[in-house]
Image (cartoon, rainbow, N blue to C red; front, side, top):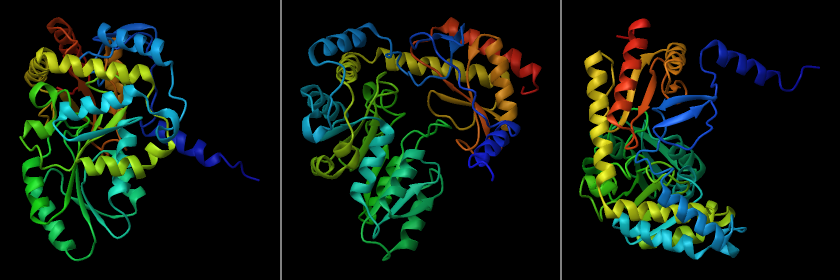
Amino acid sequence: MADRLDFIRTELDALRTQGLYNDIRAIDSPQGAWLTVDGRRALNLCSNNYLGLANDPRLREAARRAIDEFGVGPAAVRTIAGTLTLHLRLERRLAAFKGVPAAISFPSGFVSNLAVIPALVGKEDAIFSDELNHASVIDGGRLSGARIVRYGHADAASLEARIREAAGTYRRGLVVTDGVFSMDGDLAPLPDIVDAAERHGLLTMVDDAHGEGVLGRGGRGIVDHFGLHGRIDVEVGTMSKAFGVVGGYVAGRAEIVEWLRQRARPFLFSSAVPPADAAAGLAAIDILEASTERVDKLWANARHFKEGLRRLGFDIGRSETPIVPVMLGEADRAQAFSRALFEKGVFATAIGFPTVPRGQARIRVMVSAAHERADLDAGLAAFAEVGRARGAI
């Protein structure tokens, strides 16, 4: 009799052969410009720690105080005995920061999308989704049972055409887009998308995971960046990137947030973030509201690194943000490039299929406000050396 797990071994061998197997490196230090990775010091060019807050002493102190006051875990789902006053404070502060009536927090940004989409649409409805939306948006749509209609990436004309083609075939419609697309660093044309949705009476939702802390006034996100307050029904965010903590949230209209408290399955059947994370998130909001210094430094660093890569001759795609894809083609080539960078003391991981389409593997560089100019120049020197040695430039 054949081993029931032979299919897994076969698939794993195929991943190794195709250069798609993930060798996951282990970090033995706090997040920052430099890390200890697999026992060696390396320049960190792949974390989502945009503003350098993940090891900020003010967040660490807030987390310690919360542990002393509330313990280490909520010990119940939110609707029974797991809602702490810290969670409510965080939700009020997030709503104020985003400039919306209300917000609700979840264990992660991924879970936030799984929570909100099935609560808004079902089997009789339609979701109009950018073809490059995040996996959590795709999975949330699948869970809802709604018909998913994909439109061309960042193409409002394609969205308009898909809406017109589907007219009369659904009860409710929801238009969903990432704000910043995490693999390419480009922006959704949100004003045009909102215009199309409003013309047809559709709900609008933006996943702003890579926009908050990066775009808008003091990092308030893509809705603020485009001046669209009051025209977006749902903003989904994460605390695990620019805020430097863990957790997710949905912000927007008060009745939507109230509905999610009653019917969002991750809210009903999952514990909230621990007290330390909620308190650290509050401290992060304090920092962002007090000054734009970190956001300004992030953008200055991103401009410097991108200009350096362009001068060297690298293809950095269509990035408009501090996400910088260094396009290399096939997955095995990108993995070899990443290993060579690591030998030079630079930690920058390769990304290939299925995260990105086949033939579009890359090193995704994530620049941070934690980096100093000397750090970035050291990274550029390593990219230049490896790029020339491997024929990438």
